[in-house]
Image 1 (cartoon, one colour):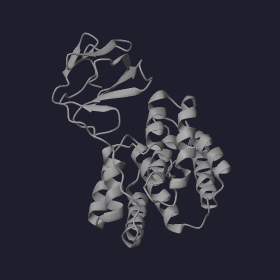
Image 2 (tube, rainbow, N blue to C red):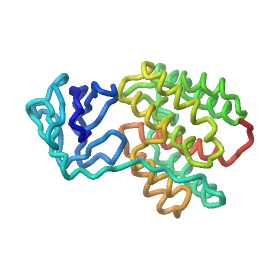
Image 3 (cartoon, one colour):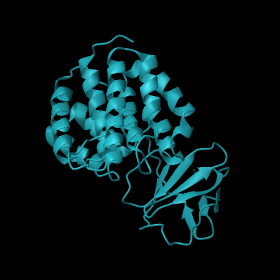
Image 4 (cartoon, rainbow, N blue to C red):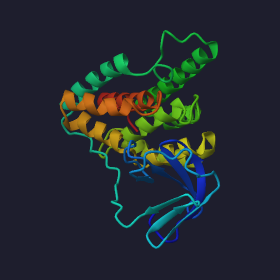
Amino acid sequence: MSSLKWDGYVHSIFDRTVNLQCRTNDELYTIANRQVDNAPNTLITDRGGFANQGLAVGDRVYAEHDRLYVGKALVLTLRDVRVWRSKLPSYPDDEGILRSNAAAAASFIEIHGKGGGMKRTSERANAMDQEMGRLLTERSNGLLRALSKGEASLASHYAIQLMGLGPGLTPSGDDFLVGLFAVINLADGPLQPFRPMFEQLAAASADRSNPISGMALKKAAAGQVRESIGDFMHHMIHGSKTEVIRSLSRVLDIGSTSGTDIALGLVKGLKLSLDKKWEV
């Protein structure tokens, strides 16, 4: 973002984030406050919030002389910005720690995860919510089953059917795929052969969801995820159960049900990797 050629406009404004649309590469970028963790295309600042700060959707955004100008209300210096890059661990040769941690994480999500998205809840009474929950379960299970059988075409079908499925800024189906895509991108992992297919699919299906969620899908399919997800994956493979639960709690705190939806994609993807009962 520090490039002097960067030029775009304000796409959307929230209390903790401002999303910017770049005209050069047509990607979304985010300016976030200190409560948000590092993520792809994201600039973390020490600001408290962005709502009611004089910013407006459509304001021009451009970089010049190590400064980023956001409309007429916000100027950020880029001189001392530290570059952060998403990094996922490699799949382990010895699966013992991962197998034990996967069981612990699944149990923790069952108890502490938020219902209403990928995680079903007995308290859901609304008929529309019940149907949405059924579709999310049916399509996510279909995707996992297709992957377990090495049926790439069927897996692609179910992934497309999950994109944009569910309410909210980042629909539950998208969040689940973000977690699953992170697992698929583990170097030397059993699911890695599916990566090119899903990367192409995410890039070509951006119109199936909103731009913010679509960009998260595109980045995750390429192995670029937010820092809390990378930390959780590292601890799942190399850490103690205490470290797993601590990092999982950070993931579960993302959004309303988004964190739980992402975590389920991560854990179910890892469990599928441990099974290794298919041929690609």
